[in-house]
Length: 191
Image (cartoon, rainbow, N blue to C red):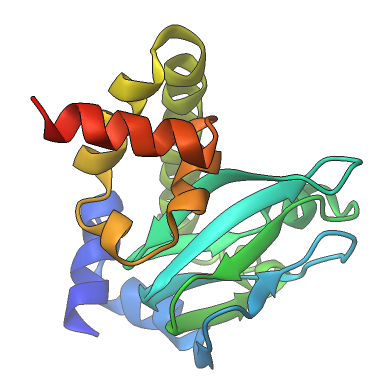
């Protein structure tokens, strides 16, 4: 729990009292590899803090092909944010790629704390800002960088993740085929 408190305080300063109120909203749930935290088509109502494990956020096109949008490694916040904010049907999936432990809370219950605890609202704003910056960075990388450079960035941002998850998930995240990823890895190993 101390590592989690440190993680939250790194995102935004928060008093010990407010942090205790915040953490009291969450309950611990465990998930086995291959299970989902959020599924497309549902109206999701909760989000969580991944404290152990790895998840992927992905969507499917009309033909059923999957596209990995992001990976989450502990510690990190996870959730189907668009559906939580808009109340509309969820369009993404969050699947655990390893066994995981998540602190889970109801989104409406969480935002009900804003008025009484402004530091929680500020933390939420900071999380949204960080998410936007991360999303924009990823979009720019996909459009302006070649696949080899994107893989190098992936390796920097997610050290050792390629040892934990299937390579086809990494290929999907990078926007390449599994064959192209194998070539990229061979090229980089030869340098």
